[in-house]
Image 1 (tube, rainbow, N blue to C red):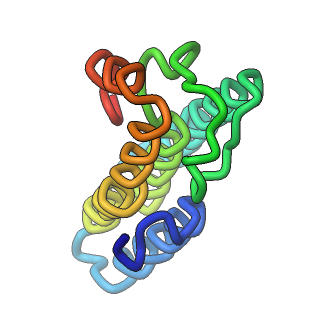
Image 2 (image 1 turned 30 degrees about the horizontal axis):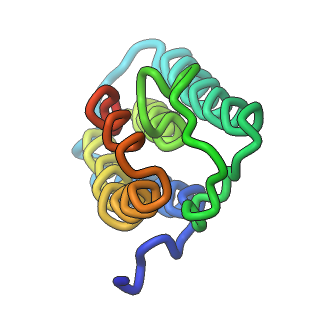
Length: 153
């Protein structure tokens, strides 16, 4: 298992990327773009992101399974209902939408590009290891679910 697999909580990664986005926006003001109503758009995106993530947590709680992203092997059930019919990772998708809202608030193209680092990191060090653990735990049932529902959207 590589050193970073399932080691850093996704919310910590999100906070790090948000800080990186802010630093990038400060370092490269030439990448700023005008965006009327950016605060309203950013707030809407952040609210949609939080709602998406909360829907994922609620589905896990209703199924009485773990929400701990660092220990997917402890999942007691495979959740494929609710928001999980549209995305396999609503909590991560919600965090990404919040980051996109942050980039809109910053109104900086580099910040928007840097939000993509969240996806790259999570795919490699969080989601792929989670999927391996869930494949081991739930076998063909998880494989069938993956065939029907996309990882992000």
